[in-house]
Image 1 (tube, rainbow, N blue to C red):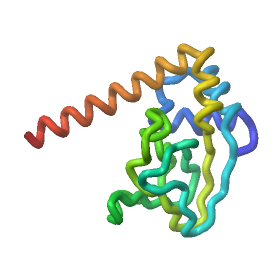
Image 2 (cartoon, rainbow, N blue to C red):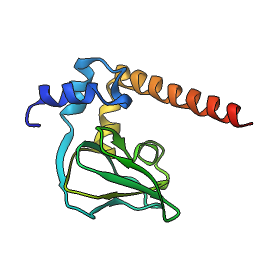
Image 3 (tube, one colour):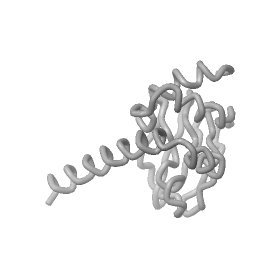
Length: 143
C-alpha cells in the first residue's frame, strides 16, 4: 500500500474510520507507516502501555487475555484501539500467527494531528458512541 490514495481507500473500510471524510482520512493516511510482522511476533502484551495502533491489512492475529485465546483476526481491523486512545494498559496480547502486514499509527503523531482536525475527532466520537451503545445493549440483554 504505497500511495496516500490507496491508504485512504483502505482506511475507509475500517470500522473505526468509517465516519471520517476522505479529506480527513488523507491526513491520517499521511502519518501511517507500513509494518510487516513475522509468524509468532508479539505486537503488544496485555498490560503494556500503548504507543501505537495496528491496522491489519492481511495475515492472522490472535488476541489473548489472561492467557486464553479470545479472538482470531484475519479481516482488516484496527488492533489495540482502547489502550491507544485512553493511554491505559492493553487489555489483551496480540500475537501474529502468520506473516502479517499492518499500517501503524503512532500515538503522539495521531494526537498532534487531532489538534488541528476537529472533523477527524467527530468521526471517531461517532465510532465510540456506537461501540458503547452495542456494549450497553449486550449488557442489558445479559442482566
